[in-house]
Image (cartoon, rainbow, N blue to C red; front, side, top):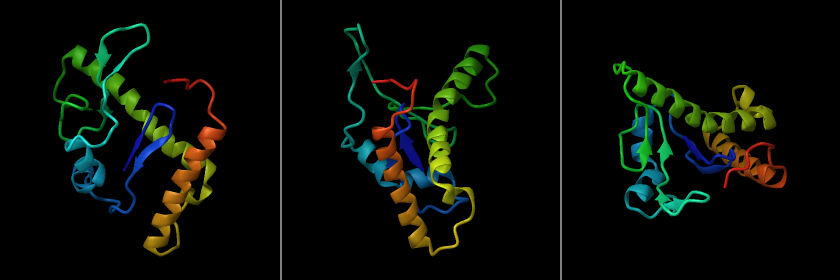
Length: 150
């Protein structure tokens, strides 16, 4: 499980959950959930958009299994057929793709993630964390074009 910003940089990575584990349960057990719910994350301070005086709150964009919170946006349930809700959910899913693209870039740069790792679980965790740190450093040193979001 990971949290990334609009520039594909990993802000938080939780490595080691079972592959088939439900995302909602993994979220409940991770440190980031505790830090955010106790308001100690430092990620969610409101900011003004460019040329605007009114602060806008930050939100985490998540999948449907996550519990709805004031700081978390998730799509409407599939049972909702209202066109405006379908459009909102579609646009939110496009925003959610950023974290998926972060993993895609990670896999592209580190080919070890294109196959099954034949290592001990603890070694795999360390390799994954190392790769995420190197991914962030590479993005800092060689930023991707067209992602100038501040």
